[in-house]
Length: 242
Image (cartoon, rainbow, N blue to C red):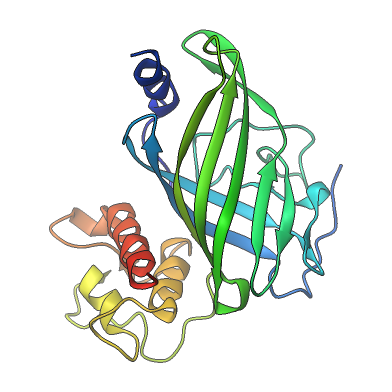
């Protein structure tokens, strides 16, 4: 998912003023986690896209090989050096296991309203599900050098590492080539609730280049509103966990 605007950090400012690493691929928790953060403070300004590649050894998120994935979010800058020839965002570290998760980014710089500012992202107070494949909790970003006192942006986040598509999930029930929100919900054992298998199937298809079945709810032409459909699926899944 790619956020369509880079102005949210500037909006927060206005509101507040009123070396390649080798990943441990054998660890099932190593991989890309996709999701969103819903910003609530300093005011409710909507949802932003998040994506992290986490290299997990034991329960440690290794800073050398873990980073914000720039291919799925436009809110963060590239930070040298590349990893495996790929331009990546700020490095992250922390811990992730079957029942606990926390993450902190390195401090990094961005230009906001003509000012160079320092930023750091922290994810904590987490609930962990599906053996570590689904994560939700508190999102906090601290921005300094923008206002006389640090600007704290906070809200909630949800992240998921897609598992293989299971039988019955990702079924195009009406044959229109779009996996709608209703069809995502209908894929699991409970057709009234979005389960993790449903969410995994939708995430896999959304991020799969050239997939024959695309995520989206008509009337969006060619399922081009897939981002909104997936964000709603993430919200519905998160709501079902509480």
